[in-house]
Length: 312
Image 1 (tube, rainbow, N blue to C red):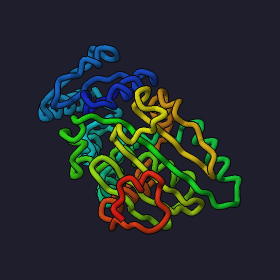
Image 2: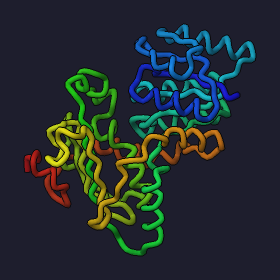
Image 3: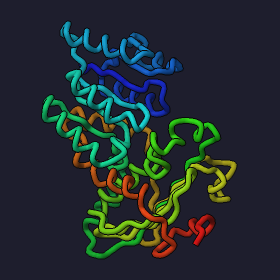
Image 4: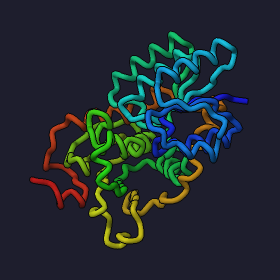
């Protein structure tokens, strides 16, 4: 049986990782989180050891290693700014790492992780689940078969309450801001489908929302991201808290459903040796890192939502 450890067991995304571990026939032997609201473990691995102090977690992991109780994979669901440190810990503990998005906040952090991979012989895989979505796979096949340049509008609004800004997610130094925290896997998807990035513009950058323009090899993309429920279209307000829309050449691409099993699919791919390695992640990390420091401009192709908030 494949043995797993989990860092960030109290996080929002951790239950999906627990479900994926169970789906691939693995065993969660130990978990860590400084918060103890982790009763969800009972639904998956009630016998897992759990620690709220990292030092005790570290000691337990080391004890397992010395006694031959190897941990094969360490799943990392901690706050974004801790991902690279926890990946380093996993590799030095003799495990491969499975890290939630974003892998890191800046591209130079990838270089450091690559050195530790080389030193330890272990590997880091990232959850880039949209690449596995059937609708996204179909769109990539369509684009690959086309010789034309495409136009894309991406809108993603996921409602978050006041807690969001009081948590690490609302701190740009820890989360990377809205574009990084909720957008990085969309930017990965766009680069995966449309090729290398050629140009980027920032049109809006606020604590609750962000927008910009991306020119890829095969497409021009206007994008808008928000965690403010007031940005939801009137047609879904009161009935839904999340709105996803992607149009390709004016036609809506439906991918609102089908997310339930993507983490399970991601784990199966990783265990079969087809996980997404460090260099696969670099392009989307470069996009979000550059966006944080790019000058906000009022020129260029702007997303229709930008007019509500843009100063210029």
